[in-house]
Amino acid sequence: MAHRYTQLFQNPILKSQLQRPGKSDKIGLAFLYQPNAKRLLIKGARILALLLLLSNAVQVTAQGKIAFTSDRDGYIPDIYTMNANGSAQTNVTNSPDAIDLEPAFSPDQRKIVFRSSPLGLNNELYIMNADGSGVARLTYNADALYEVEPSFSPNGRKIVFAASLVGQSYDIYIMNVDGSGITRLTNNPANDANPSFSPDGRTIVFHSNRDGNIEVYVMNVDGSHLVRLTNNPATDAYPVFSPDGRKITFTSDRNGKLDIYLMNVDGSGVTRLTNNPANDGYSVFSPDGSKIAFLSDRDGNDEIYAMNANGSNQVNLTNNPSDDYVPSWGTVADTDGDGVPDLYDCEPLNKKVAKYIVCHDGLTLCVDKAGFNDHLNHGDKFGRCGATAKASEIVQQIITTFNVAISTYPNPNKGQFSLQLNNTKANKAEVLIADAKGVTVERRHVQLTAGKQTLSFNLGNKATGLYMVKVISEEGVQTIKVAVQR
Image (cartoon, rainbow, N blue to C red):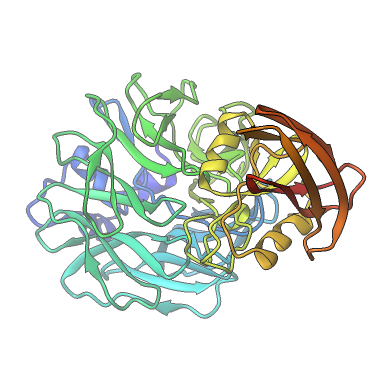
């Protein structure tokens, strides 16, 4: 099946651009790292080389837009954007004299970084407004044959990418968003490629053939503490973190053809998500983690599909006779850089408050990291409870009223909760319940018994907000902070 981009590879001018000095001109595994070859069917190797970018299309909305590459408007590929349901497909580069590939949204979706190769010239990285205006060149490295696969950091201040210097293999680099401060993160005789950030911006996942075949690796953002996550005779490539940072999706031919797989961040618990006679690969999460966009040739040419995060409900989004590829959707933004993605951050502009928003029994809560993991382990959802729900007064009151660490798990269901006491002796106590402004809204006297004792409360008749419950006795003052949302 000769797709348009495979034909493009046969163009003598472009073909010369694909070959690194000293490399064979055969179509083979060596071309897995040749950035202009989007799709090369390698005979005898059982692998479709999807030479594509995992681009972090970060956006604030739950679904947002998808950027991709297509040659539908001519022989030369351009960058397009579309809505998450496949509508409003728009050419935003429309460059007849340059090959534009591998788009990646900035966290606020106002910018797109991409790779471009004016015919006859090296690949360089460029940045533009999301509508295609204001194109600016970022890299000017005369020694680099290819600078490819750019991806934004969650806070939008850095770009990670892969580059191949003349006569050398691909390594991973990082730079400031204006193209300054380029730093080399890996330096290995093998090829390291397809880098992208974790949602907290502290690690980078990528694939490499440094151990003999292509596997998935992760390292710190400074290039230290490199760890191999997959160890399979087949090819494992194109990894990307889930928005909650707990999973990684990747492409593998371990079952004889390319399919999409999911694993834990430590490499355990590998699960197959697609199982189609065609080749499926190059997967990227939606910002809210509920969907995965991916590339497939199951309809006779390369198209972009979307499915639920568990692999169900696979739908063709582009559905065009030409080839559409390199979907860019990605993870959520972390504007303040506190390690909590904006969609789940109680204060996305306040780095000092690293607290997550979760939905527990219909309540939108603000919890710390430990509480966040507890909620997910108990089957709760991360993010707000409803599409139109807000963090409510709870979040703001916790942040503005108390400059202390607050954990709200387990949280009362509609104001009902219990306070566990362990008294050394029987005595009397006074219970004061105050609102976030310190105004006492309820006062009661209770008899304490020696040993463990449970005091039950019901604040269901109180307004939504944060309350302080104080138990004052001879043994001191015990305080619990209670968040009520009606």
